[in-house]
Length: 225
Image (tube, rainbow, N blue to C red; front, side, top):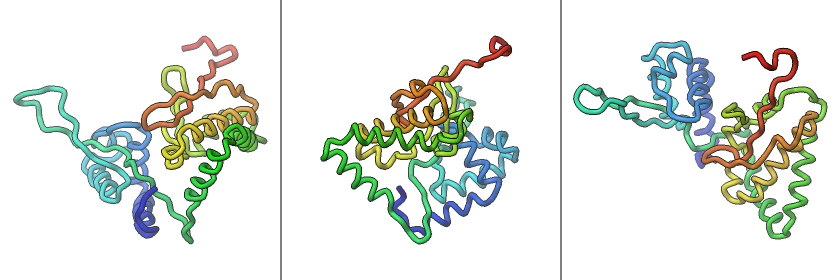
């Protein structure tokens, strides 16, 4: 989590009030990698110059990071490296008045570890997930996961989760948090009336440790391309 005071986070997040900056941030954040000015401008429907101005403002605020991509062609006439942008690794949050739930969560995770209560923690997480899905039966799990901040996207027959909502705590207690996260996702699937077996541990660098099987389409159009 950001170590800056609330005012710093508030000023940074206030930049996203501008719809152009908000769209550009969403383009970069959803890419999962480096995005050039031209790519971002085209996706956001603005000029390259305007995109560059707003992207650099987001870098100054610490919401994005910038770097340079070498051209594919090397040698004379290859051109200069292109400036690219990616989502910043830092975390921003605003609570008025200030709250620190992450510190308490860290203490509780330490208590679970000391007591050897991992199994009970997983049970509690699965029940919490089922409560999240209760009353939303039939809704696609992608929608609920997106609302919870997981940033799901499909790749190679799997539904991957670009963001871990428990990232800070997962760095301190990776085994406990990942097992609870899996149980939470399985419980969510149960609450939605879906197959909990779709969710498995499938860690990737800089992403959530859980992924889900993508369901095959059903019905008369299932075989259509």
